[in-house]
Image 1 (spheres, rainbow, N blue to C red):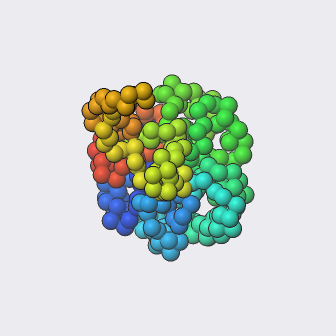
Image 2: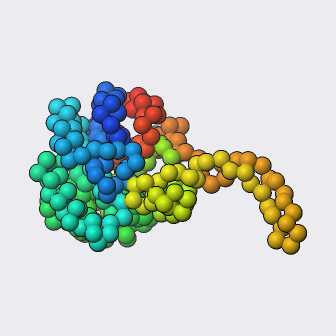
Length: 256
């Protein structure tokens, strides 16, 4: 029996990117629409774009997932409901969310629903809770080690999607207020300015004397990007490989 290959899932923020990932051989794409998604700064797609891209992906045999995975406030609820109704009518393959308002409504409307890494699921017990709700696929917390990911896969009937390339947030599953503090742009609403990835001068200042000791310049906050190209053979069990960066996906796709 031929072993099933993991789905190659790539982000799309514009039509040019859509064309490139389809040509490169992606099995599925994920994209934001409107305001409630973690790709709000990188994507300005409208519902009409989703509808048009649905036709393109269907013709290409590529699955289309829509992310609605940023923090949801009370005033967002009507927008969420309306958007989910539109997505159901369009017939997208799945919605990716984590707020209960999104995932419960998506499941109730009969849309295939995937749980975002923003939910910070780090163990099989938590995964089973969402499985009972009707979640089909889970993206575990990015902090989970390989052994923990395998446990979630073995102890549930969920599909497991894992990150294989791209920027790693310095905060726990993306929960960070640094961008909001500096620019009043919340990373939890998909508007992160990635302040952590700036280069900083590091110094120590004595509160007693005011003496300053300069320690040098470095990228002291942001973690190194995730790169799994050298051990992808250990990730073949996953149902989906998720790429976060649009500039390096060719390297992963071409291993087939």
